[in-house]
Length: 202
Image (cartoon, rainbow, N blue to C red; front, side, top):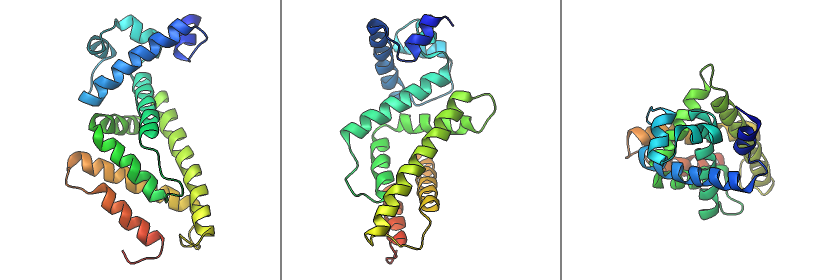
């Protein structure tokens, strides 16, 4: 990969390259929202997106890097369209995320694929994505939990970092169950977890 390709993939300083990359990413998001992350090649995705395999490789490098870019951009857009209410509990944060995901089940599959790939060897992009995402979520949630504990809205005897890890694990596990069985009520289960963490009857 030459320097110009690296620049374009990294956001670069060339406006035309940045615009072209975003155009391809926009089309790729539509494809993955529709089809999920069914096993395929970068060449097949390029055909669906309507660009050459060389163009897709130039801007994203690999199928895994494209999957990460698609998920991150979709998550950013969803956050703008459906922001989390101020002062929300950790479980509510994940409930809002789950509601966004239900609108685009193909991206739920994509996320699950990335997390699964992160557990295998030779998947650096997926490993970095999952590791950084979990660390960021735990950090943000831990801070929210401390604030809720200070205001008396959450039990004060709970370790914030462990609560954050538990809520993320519960949400991701429920999301996987929902992919397999649409009757699983992700939101209701997280609401029950909220009540339990607050010391209220479940």
